[in-house]
Every structure is written in structure tokens, then in C-alpha cells.
Length: 231
Image (cartoon, rainbow, N blue to C red; front, top):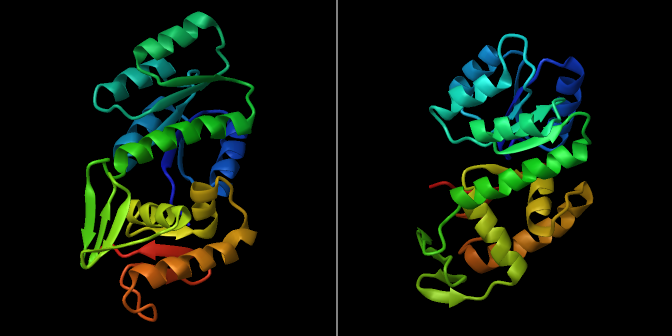
């Protein structure tokens, strides 16, 4: 399932497009691809991605010009992926508005690690502010103090249960896969962890749901994961 950020790759090398696409798919990122600067700018306006991966050596325009045009309308994170490794090229790209720079050839693991840095920043910006509360029906979560209340009475959650609850609330309405939940809560994602997640979710439900047979908040997507009700 597509639960993570969306990425726009602007790159004319078909080999790089292929292996980046395979890695994005296996890590549950949504990916749009363009092989020209003009096509990339059009896809940016049409799809509002969360992150841009941009090659500088494009067939129709220099990548620096793409950065400048996008910066006229958006602060979206832009990571340069280029064979131009000279220091001045990097300085020019960063001065134009790029946020990061990785030089070809590169290891996919390093690229994914850098994407995760942007992803954490995006989630922090999109998540509840430290002073906010989440209130839905009889459930209240005080994010500033890390406290949870049902009908005004405080309940105790374990650290894992609280982390699961806040993750679900921050992504309410979205289906979160077992792998995604495992990565966000424990730092790794393997299909073998689905049973452990079910155990924790069952415990969390017993604490926050008035009727676990007909849950109000945490909904199961059979064979996929879980979704927090968005209304």
C-alpha cells in the first residue's frame, strides 16, 4: 500500500530510472518520473509531490534552471542526483535552492537514507504540534504531556502502545501496512512482525475502544494493516 511520501524523479538515464523505481516500490514510496526538465515541472504542478530527485544534465534544460523555476512557487525539498561532482557545481545547485546533493555513481542505500531524513522532517511538520490535543468522541490525546483520556478519565498506555496510537492518529484515514508500522515504531520492517503488531493493537484496542468487536477508532484492513478512523 502507498502510505509514505510521494517522490518525483527527473532523470533521463533509463538505467537509473529503473533501479530507483524498483527501490521506491519496495520501500512503499509513490514515484513519478520524467525524463526532461519541462516534463518534470509539469508533473510537479500536476501531482504536488513531497520530494524531488533531480538530475542536472537533462536534455532540454539545465537542472539548475528547474530548481530556480520550482523555487519561484514552492519550498519542496529538492535533492540533486548528478555526475557533476565538482565543488562549484554543488555550490551553484545549493545556492539556487537545492536542499541536498548526491554524486553519481551512488549506492541506493545512501539515497534511501537521505530520503528518510526528508521524510522525518515532513512527518514532523505534518504531525500534531507539541501543544496540540487530539479529540475525537470520547478519546482525548494530550501530545504535550503524553497523556490519554477516555471520557475525561486518564488511562495508562505502554510506550509502544502510545507510539502506535500517535502514529495512527497522525496518519488517520490512511491504511498503514504491517511493514510500515514496524519501520516507524521499531525501526525495521519485516513481514514476520505482523503477529507482534496484532498483539499490540489488540491490547491498545482493549484500552481505548468501548466495544472491541465494533471498534470506533482502530480499523483492521485484513491482510494489509490498520487504519485510524478519519471521522
